[in-house]
Length: 278
Image 1: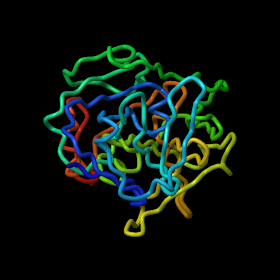
Image 2: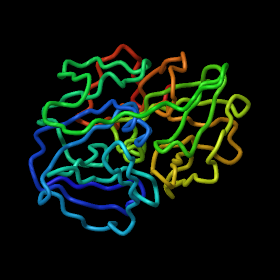
Image 3: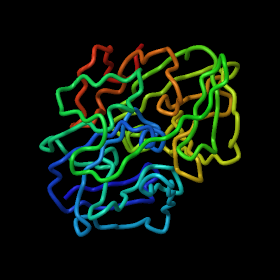
Image 4: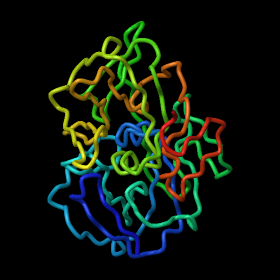
């Protein structure tokens, strides 16, 4: 038995099956929906997933060229989605160990230039042999001198100038549950170098009551990730997965490694910190 929950706790479910396959998807649609470098799923049969609460809190977005995508109305976390004859369950929201599951990377051709796949798992440039759908997204048109970004549906758009002040790969449990992924990849830009293009009025947000600084934002239409603004804070947190092109900069380090998911393999050369760097 493996329990799952979203960040705000509205969605609760159980997976009553052995999870033997862990799939890491690098397509642009998964990245923009999760707001993470890649999405990680386990696949289970229809009868192996049992909802405990929150089905009435689900919002569904159905892109014309892809499968439907579901998320929590309250916090934007990605929810299990029915595809074909199985559920795709986001591993970042499961509390149990998946260390026995075999892994694979799919849609690697859509991987962003700044993310390195450093493990030895099998890689497929497109879908895995047993997948029957294709997932990609046409980038939003760019403006010279700017790096643009958008949510999954393209309603929320923004731009940044230059490189970020900081860029961290965060493995804290809040980032995992908010992004429904292995970890977040958070680039911090000063307010002077960040601008909204459209859709700011379509933002939803959630601030965990037990968190002093953490907050998450999402598009209420598609559930996709979005930049995070906070009152009296001079920086905007931009999920790097939302960029439409290579921003030129690269992540600096892995942080909150003490909270890393047991199934997440970190094999790149970036510095690692158990919590925040001093």
